[in-house]
Amino acid sequence: MFYRINKIKQFNFQINRVLTYGEAACDMDVIKRNLEHVTNIEEWYEAFINVAKASTEYLHKAYAYRMAEFFLEYDDPRKQEVSKECLDRFHEGFQKSGIFFELYKIPFETGTMKAFRFPCEDPKDIMVVCGGYDSFIEEFVLQVYEFNKKGYEVILFEGPGQGECIKQQLFFRHDFDKATSAVLDFFSISSCIFLGISWGGYFAIRSAAYDKRIKKTIMYDVFFDGYEVMTNPLPSLLQYKIRKLIDENRTQELELLCNRICEKSVMAKWMFHQGKYITGSGTYYEMYKKLGMHNVRSFHEKITCDVLILAGEKDHYIPIKHYKKCIKLFPNARSVKTRLFTKKEGGEQHCQIGNHMLAINEITEWIEEKNILSR
Image (tube, rainbow, N blue to C red; front, side, top):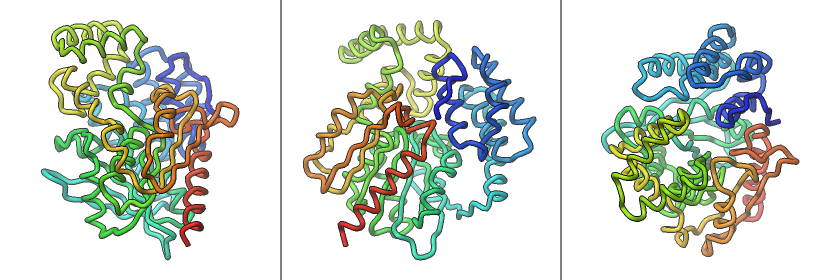
């Protein structure tokens, strides 16, 4: 269930990211009581720090620390300290919960990528999973562990722009397939399923286009164009102005406009500054040009595997037009299945937050169906 707890849309969505896991991740009443009246980022930080310190459960502490640091800017000295607390509590919580995985550091270009391997006796298949925009893998463990329990070996990894990679200046990039191929090479994988979460929906389809070891790919959720996604949260007039300035290469005017937006909105300031940070960009123009390269149009005809496309009808990050574009975009795919989750069934939000098991079950059923047909 997606709860209406805080009147600020971005705050409310992030709160629900924790609530979707239920008692495993939080005390719901405590979260509601502490977060319903929060109106700014500093209050948000203080509220979740208090929740973390008051909790006696490791995973409850971990998710609270994750939310506390979420909106802090990368150069805020509190961010690194809280992030460390978050990761330490996650790992203690996983151990206490009996969630077993092996940790790897996979060489990639000038650094390494962190990966968790969830082994399985006589696995049905191998599922490789990545997150999306500025994510780290610990926050996805409770989700992917569901696939492990269903009989799949799971490899969950951080790629460029995510988790520990960004600290090594391995920046967010459109050719994520290179990172995926490095993971498949490292584990000597000849055939697998690839699942991309959130912006990872783009990484999943991109990886499948360029690495044919991927036999099934899942966009969880759909993603078509990074340029549109990074302007979508803004009012329509500002979307138009930003796109026009970028298209006409009016870089100085774009910088002035984005700075004015940041002065008026702390949420926009966080979004813009985080975007520059993870892409390694010095200007907003450079950031938008890099994110605009995350575009399915440039390689869609290369997709030859089975494709599952998921979407939520009320997704406030990914425009619904992305779903409409992608459902007819892969003419050479072996098969394409699409699924639009609705408010009535509780899956209308981005990545089905509020009822994420709806998506987990849909993905599992699709994989099983494809495996039966291929026998």
